[in-house]
Length: 369
Image 1 (cartoon, one colour):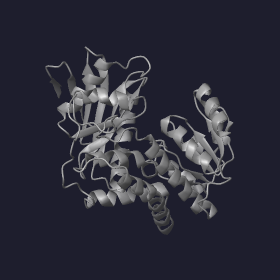
Image 2: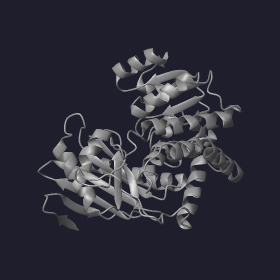
Image 3: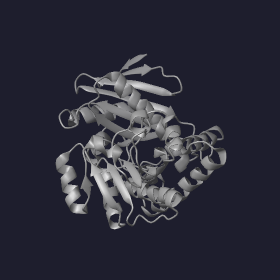
């Protein structure tokens, strides 16, 4: 079904089994090509970031947004946010094609959904970009605004740091990061902040990034060793922390890993769910990505409470990611299956019995510009 609105934004609903709503969005005037995916809204309105990325094909973009929105369902359920799983992607090179017109057109698309989907920044999209989107819709979080929570990356990174402490506790018997070797893949806004936390906690760092200038700059700042992106899988370390794009753990890379644990802030770290079984068979502990990287989500949803944003409540919830992961590790041990399967089973239980379902509508404090 195709719906055309007066503002020239075109909606085309796609039928995808297991998903509540998937919409192909286009606007010839601004050259917008996007997809909005609502996976599951059992517990509340769908909430998830907007990724701007130069996908080579539409199918590649569709596959990514479907995986990301499903991950958000489980991330929200396990973080007990009272929101559902959604995500959006804009098919564009953010360095070349991102324009105010394109962002506003996307904002109009989000607004047409009437609050079914709430967007935020993601890869290739900044909080400043979200301010542009907000000119067309109130259904935006994580803004540079006195009533919003701002950049979520420090909160995501802190949750990931706590997750690394959890895997060290499980694999080494002590949560201390001091003198542990951590290999960090990807040094974007979250990865770079994680690097800072690890440095001050005394970790020995090995880093890589597709941008060699950024990598060398951070290596000097934190005394880290560097390697080429393809070499990071062969590095001997205590923890491998993937902080770039998804699908980096797959049959080819899993066999090369020389770490005790995988714990990073990237979404959809596993290419396939079965890759978690491969890690388990190799004796590598996996911190499920939708648990360890939930800090940013936990932070931004706080601004939708009626009393408004305050950083203290999300700080405590993010701190407790350590305990949540330890519980998941215990569930996996008791049932003799992977930590990923344990986290999914816990999420499925909460969805089935509507544990944590939202009963109060989100409150959008910010108004239109």
